[in-house]
Length: 84
Image (cartoon, rainbow, N blue to C red; front, side, top):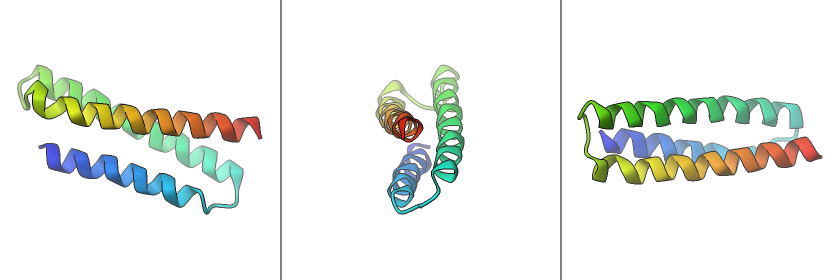
């Protein structure tokens, strides 16, 4: 279970790198909002997975930390774009 989730987190990180090369600010902001919503949904699924016993805290906790880190990066980038 953890491997596909880790892949999703790394995919979001890769997408953030690609965003640096985009020229349209409005497109960046919208794309980031969508990515942020997807990360929040992923975080919810991880919490539920732990509560129903699909994974242990030791398995899920590192992934939740990665999701939180990427979420902070996205929120920071959105705030920076909105300030420009």
